[in-house]
Image (cartoon, rainbow, N blue to C red; front, side, top):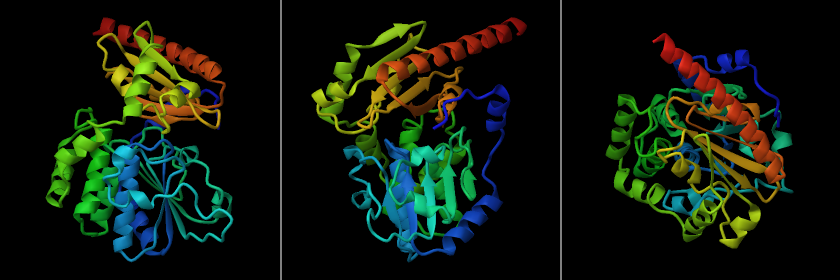
Length: 355
């Protein structure tokens, strides 16, 4: 994975308008209609949008008569066990067997690395790839790229694709897609919640999705191990110049019996502090790599820092993963983060003076 800095020119090109076009929807529709056995993959350390998009599209394709395989290289968090079809998601795809997929669909992945590592992947070089995503930093790595950085979530884009394909919604598809929208908007609280997003949520509720049930499971519940992880992390919390950060070493995670990847939502919690402009959480994974979650308050942008280290995301929520050891990874990212914040603050100050 590349860790070289991204120039301002490249960053400006990334931020160009990529609003979803009818031509892209048509290409995706034609591609799906031409296959039988698609492989659907969501990103590592899956969140609600990744899992909801994966299971929602998977069920829709199954209803079309296709034989989709749903995959994620990391375990699905237990709080999403209420989602129909989540038990069919696999972490390995036919290792040691003859595997034949006629389409790969990437869901909620800003780049190829976010798809994880599956053993048959090298054999899929000639298989077409449909990239469905909403991240600002998406690298358009697919043969067909259904990417809209203005969308609230990948689940919203999947909804628009199913609408374009005239696939009828049932309660199970609706529950999965509304889970994606609810979790990525933090319960309709983010700045990209538009009238269209609310209308989409209404359509999904009319199709049978229960908003209270989704919020209860996906936002208001977490495992005892996750709560213990937060408690252990808080004793290590560091604050400097309105930046909050903490590391979650493998030993800490094992001590509290936290077996999932990711930070259990800790970065989003930390940035809610009144004194925080930015929060960073560094998670040491079993494979020795370090997963970094970055969050910011409105007016700041952490996506450009994530992009420097081969990651991506949105201005207010981004992430990356890079080689360990943990302390070195933390130092590298914090240096880049401080430099970026200094530039942004100077820019804000200059804008205020001109105003």
